[in-house]
Each structure stands twice: as C-alpha cells, then as structure tokens.
Image (tube, rainbow, N blue to C red; front, side, top):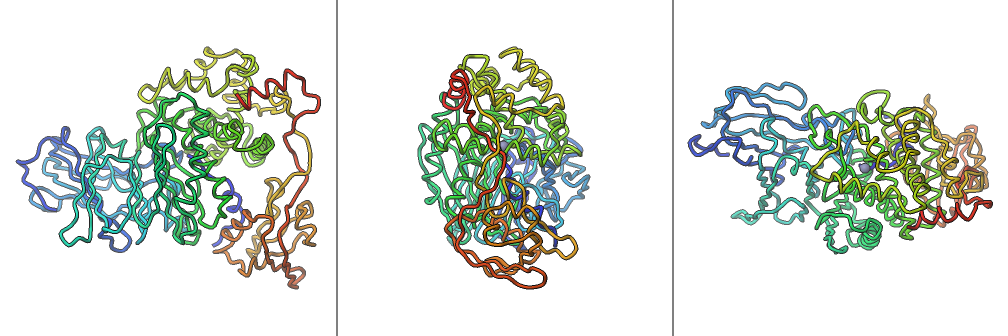
Length: 628
Ligand SMILES: [Zn+2]
C-alpha cells in the first residue's frame, strides 16, 4: 500500500466541520463452488444487491463474514459495517433467523436448511468525510451512476469453513458500461431486452476474490505491452480531465524502467492499474494512495492535479505497488500467508514490506535515469525530515509492526514510507560497502524470493537472523540497534560511506510549506487559516509582502470555508511557477488583495549534497549504489 503524505499535511489544517432450488439438486458445501452475484444494474438508494449461494451444509451452524482487515492495509476496515438487511433463506424460500455476532459476522443455525444469503451493500467513498469509520480509499468501494469501484472484499464475504472453496461471481451491469477486471472471465449473457449484461467470473478461492478488484462504468482503457507483461490501464476521471490515453506514456516508460531495474524477476503475464480520480468534494474519496494486489493495483488520486504533478505522483505510487511483487507478495511471513481477515496477526517486518518497497520505488528512478541524482537526494532528505519531525524516531520498528493496529503504534504507521525506506537505504549502502559494490538490497530480495516465494512463507522471528547469515555481521548491529532497537539512525554515518553529507542550502519549496514544514496554520477559535511566523523564510510570500498572522480569506476567487479549505490548500500545494493567482488576505481587519504570477519559491533548509572532499573510493561506492 502507499498512502500519500500531502493529505496528512492538509489534514492538519482542517477539522471542521432467486429462486430457491430443491435441496436434492445440491451437493455438499465443502466441494461446491459458492455462487455469488452482484447486481449493479439494480441499485436503489445507493445500495447494491448481493446474493451468496453455497452448497448444502452438513454442520448445525455456519458463520458468514465480511473482512474486518484486508491484506496490504494495516488498519481495521470493518466491511461488515456497510452491509444492510442481511437475510438467510431456506430451500422453500422461507426466511431463516440470523444472529449478528459482531460488526462483520453473521451466524445461522439449522444450517442444513440454508439455501442462500442476500444483502445490500453501501459504498464507502461517499461517507469518508463523515464520522463513519471507513477503509482507505484505495481499499474502499464506490457506487455512483457512472462509476463502480468493486473492491470485491467490500461486496463478497466468506463462510469460515469454506475459505478454500471456488467462487463463481456474476456481475450484472447496464449494457453501456465499460468494465475492467483481471479475474478470469467465464462467460457473458445479455438480457432479453438488451439493457443489461451479466459477466461471469471464476475465482479459485476467497483470496482471489479479495486480490482481484474490478471497475465498471464510464471508464477509459488502454492496453500496452512491457516485455512479456500486458498492462491494462483503466481510468475514471469524472470531469474527463485525465484519461488512460493521457497517462499511458508515463506508465509505459515507468514500467519499462522497472523491468530493466528488476531484471530476471518472475512476475505476472498481466498487470492491471485501476485509477479513480476524485472530484475532491464532500462525497468523494480523499484518502489518496494505492493498494497492491498480486497482479493489479487500485489508485485513488485527486482529479484536480495538473498533468505533470499527477504523472510524477503516479510514477511514485504505481512503481511502489508494482515493486510489491517482491515483498510481501513473494517474500512474506506466515502471518501474511495464512492471513485471517477477522482476527489477523501482524508480522514484525513492515520495514521490509513497505519500507524496502518504497525505497525501490525511489532508487529505481535514479538508477534508470527517470530523475537526476539531485532529485533523488531531495527525496531522501525529505524522508529523513519527515521521519524525524512527524513520527517517533525512537520507536522499535519491529514492535510497531507487530502491533500496528494499536496505540501508540498505529499513528506511526506512515513512518513505514519514510524511515522504513531509509532503513532499506542503509541496508543497501552497508551491503554495497561490504561487497565492494557488488551486492545490495535488490540482490538480497531476489535471493530471498528464490528461497521463499509466493507459496513458501518465512518464519517471522527468524528473518533477521537469516538475512544476517546471508550477508554480513555489520547488518546484525544495524538491525539490533535501529530496527529492533530504539536508537535513531545517524544518517550521516551511512551517507558518508557514499561521499554525501547533510548540509544547509537554498532549496526549492512550495507555497504552503518551507521544506516540508507548514507556513500556514488554523486558528482553533474562529477556524480561520493564517500565515505563521515562518512565512518570512518563504521567498515568494516574503517578496509579496505577506506578514505573519495575515489571514487567508480567499484564493483564486474562492472564499475559504471549513468544507473547501482542504481542497484549496491541496491545489495550492500543487501550484506551479508561471501560473496566475489571486489571494485575499485580512491584516488588522483590512483586506489586502495580491494578484500576480507565481515564481519559484525558495527557503533555506537542510539538503543532502555531494561532499567536496569525498574520496575516490566513496565516489566509486556511490556509483555502484545509484547506478549498478
Ligand atoms: Zn505499499
């Protein structure tokens, strides 16, 4: 998964506001596929009807569940809380009593008589901005007239005893919908009146239901080949700002570079990228980022992003998701392999699943010349600063990982994309140093995936010992001190090995931050947003004459309200030099209107730079680290 940080930033600002069959025709439930149907042609009051039809049970009681937690996310999603009106029917079509045991669980007695279950599903996207607990957008569901995000774990559940049964899924949809799914299609039937089409899909077991999202509606699609992988890109852009076509080149170039970087890694023959672009209003999803699956990813991003900014974010995000094919999709522990959707246990190794994956998504770009060394250093510097300023730098990463749903660990989850990636970098540099530049973290992950792989989990408690055995004693010290232990990493020690150092310099910044730190704040008493003291160190606003305590009243003609503040500051975060802007400020009760063209803003801050005194050996190691 990848969660985008800039939302966390703007988050700081806001608060505010059937037919029954005869029992004789059925065979035992254990050996029978579970027939399921989702009818998106028949939505009433924003709810989709679902039918679940298993074989005949021989047990007295059965338990049906929607997932509480899904793989790749490290929080409670409670998909059961979006289910209404769950009913069970016997073979004569009579309703049977159902006991709701907890948020995600229903129990049915006299199960021998159970023919089928029906219920209605509410979507999660349109209630994200309410008090309702919702999953991450990229794991969520959407039901709206021209778009259906079918993250199937939100629609289809499982019987405790039948998780390994095959599933057949029928999706009935209006005939004019475009659809996209990597789940194996086994047939289609058009209705007699020609208005709907039912597509049948097959899933070998419940895991495949959760691992294969679908999108239906007014989509654009593009297919292209990267080596032996067919890439299917599906894009929903409500106002047609972006399309599969407009994103295709970026994705193609990125995936070619990823393949070149990865080399001979076994992967899938098809990979799907589902992109939902959010309008950014109150009933649209706003927890931006993406979620990995074995052969696909779901991405949710703001539609308002300008093309270059969206393209660059898509490279960061989609490459991260694709690199997950190494871990946890290939290299993973028993907690991941035998995942329990209702009472999951968590592995100690988020530093690897998310951290190393995020590190790959950063370093492959400099390795394959998609970005310059300077841009890569900037990204590493911002990860160092974010990890130190926003999260507990003395928290044991393995302890956090194992207890990620609980306090005080849960609020530090975002650090897996910051410090987690830096842990990956330090291991990489250490391995390069020990091996004369020959081995690094990519070769380690490849060795681990040969040893384990998709079907063979490692023992969670033994992974670090094993990595040390496979590599060098210096990694033992590193893991003991900084991954298991609580000592913050002194990055200069590692960066020096490759001839880099953290220094101070004039650096580019945006219009709401100085090198990551917000220059605006919210007045808790009257909910106004004002520039804080640090605005004087932001060259652009300083030149515009903005002073600390100036209240931001309107931006580009839009007056700030608790409802639109997030969206307005998101747009400001993405402002590009050369664009005209208008801002109304209030200073001592008087309005001041600024109207000008944006120029690049700078601040003075920490930056990662090449050391003038670096030795040849350090330069050689740097080259091996970045370019080999
Ligand atoms: Zn991830």
